[in-house]
Amino acid sequence: MNENRSFTFQPFILLTALILFLAFCMDTTAETLRKPQYLFFLLSVFLVLFVFRQLVNITEPAFILLLGVMLRTSYVLYTAIWTRQHDVIDFGTGEGHAGYMEYIYQNLSLPTGDPRERWAFFQPPLHHIISGLWMRFCAHFNLVYRQVQENVQLLTLFYICTVTILTFFICKELKLKTWGVRIALLIVCFHPALTIMSGSINNDALSLVLALFAVYLVILWYNNPTYKLIILLALSIGLSMMAKLSGGTVAPAIAAMFLLKLIKDRDNIRKYILQYIVFGIIVFPLGIWWELKNMLIYKMPFNYIPPVGEQLNASLISRLFDLRCHSVFPSMISNGDAYDEYNVFLTLFKTSLFDDANFSLESKSITLFAVILFVTALILAVISLVATLFVIFDKKNRYGISFEHRLLFGILYITLLISYFSFALGSNNYSAMNFRYIALIIPVEAIFLGVFIDACKDKHHILFRLFAATVMTFAVSSASTCIMLGFAR
Image (cartoon, rainbow, N blue to C red; front, side, top):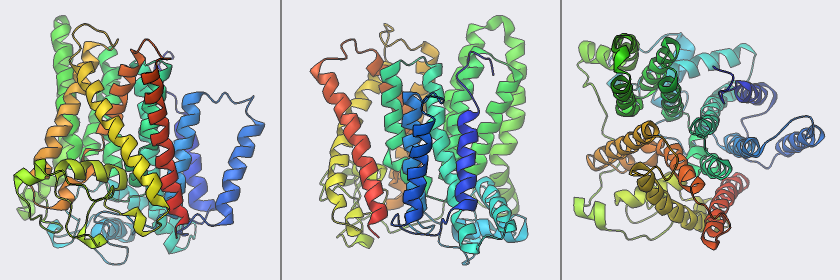
């Protein structure tokens, strides 16, 4: 990377040090924050920061990132590998994501046979390969097997914290100013969907971070179209799809950037065609080899998805326009409610905050913070939508973002929405509407909102102050909800 770039490896080195410390020096098998070791760990961190505050330049963005990492670390420490998971089942069962990882851990090979015969084994294997090898590494140092299992969450913690760091790097590449970076990072670092994903040991987190890395790389490549960057870009997209096929949703936006560069620099068309050929040679085998293999050998459909969950007994009209809301938490029969949430917009919004869980069942004291989180998130969702549309369709360059960046994020935003709604409404299963299928939209909308806020000239206006207070309230209520959940056990 050029020296004038914002990229640095230091945050990733520090994050790796944290993961290694948690994996081998802490007890990750506890299911509560009511343990003295966590309190003293937190106290130690603050004491170190206090002593070195003048030697280490901790900027405001770095401080927000640090708070986000600490929030997600606390969530992972009290969340068991079977809690708030999707298709994980449990270790020792031979099924689900946990069974998939455990098979690789025990056999150092991919499972044999038709992947449809065991639950979740149809998924592309990258996350499970990494997790199985990580478990093998942890077991080599004689950790108890329960800790080896729980340590898988440290991988997803690393992935989600990397998402926040990449968001910062993208903000710097787009030349966002102080307020723009501040708002974008507060949303991404404290968004409850990403906090919950940090403890979810399925393949969503790895696919998400690799897809966002591809977005960052294409921005760099557009400014400096080298073979090194396009190879890294191909690897990131291919590996994202090798973690989960939906990682390919970034492809239309990337293709648009390729086409725009080709049009704008027509004199070097041969150079770009050769780069695109190299890109294709790498990305397609990596991205779809698993699906092709299973289609050819086992006749498994290319984009196979098994029937899951209970069927929704609601018409398309109801799923679109019936907006009855009995609680801020998702309505689910398994939580004691009368029905499974069926409105796609409400389910999208509620699962973005609480996944499928009703946190009030674990502690009534959480409800107040959950309601505040719901209200502030709803306000920010509306503002973010308006900001996104204003920035995308800005023809007078009022927001200071270049056309290629508006094109990139605009197409990515639209692709994510189309992909989500086609999947959610194309299935009668509740689980198909979960927000995790569109989680990449969090950094995308946060960046759009940051760009929009930077263009506001009067930062002392009452409306701007109210907006800033709403963002802060969102962050505090999100953190409070997640932390209180750790003391509710």
